Length: 344
Image (cartoon, rainbow, N blue to C red; front, side):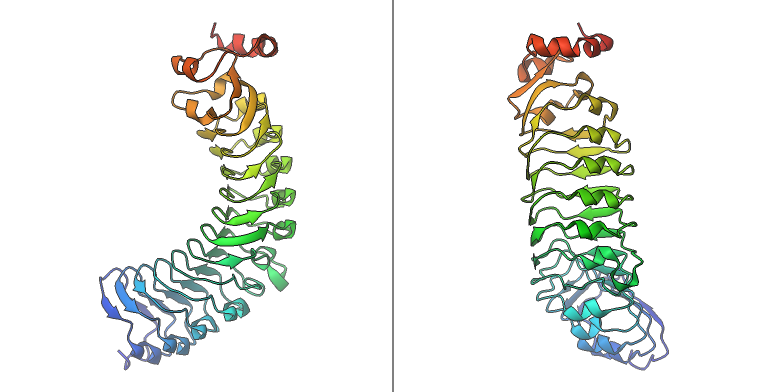
């Protein structure tokens, strides 16, 4: 293989190749694309891969690779795509990767990487996809990747840092220039503080998952400005205060999960206009009537664990064993709505 020095593209993915990556690959100086994903490769990533200075696309995902990510690979001057997900890589992500001016896709999820996310990651590169989920990373969230760095032209579309040990707070500044951000996943970390109102600046957000962290405070009403939002997962935090009426403005929302928080007050009647395919308000401190149109077959458990909730009228038989009828003071308030639904 070392004699094939004019080779530009080497694509051997999905061939059940076993064994270690040969050192001879480092001799293919003209190689621009190296794809070895979906095999059974073992051992370390050879340092000599860093000799492939023309390399643009490197994908060794879904193998059984171990050891550290070589710094020489992170310094490749033309590298745009680096995908090493679903391996058993260990150690820290080399800080040299933050110096790249070309990297647009970095996917290292489902490894055993440790340490912090390099502080200036995305500072100089046109990062579009950053997926470092399902590792053992710690320290604060990276902010530069959203801000577009010194280029002033943000590109990032997907950020997935879920299932790590990241801590600290979500800064408003993360969203200042994140006009192209469509998916934000930071679930199952140790993020504290509040959900920043500045999240509404990322106007193209479609999916947000901040679940299973240590977030507190209210759900910012500004989230209602995210007109394209399809998925909002905030369960498993310490969010308090009431559910904002502005959530009813999210006409594209299909999944809403606010369960296992400390939310209080009523479920806004305005959410009847929303009717997502999946909702979950369970295990909070909500009280008052459940809007009748939100109780669908099979969704009773979505309101359980809120002793103060009641129903104005029984929509189906399962309601009778789960929720009491509301006191008269609520029935008067909601009599018009209940009458329109015709359940007497």
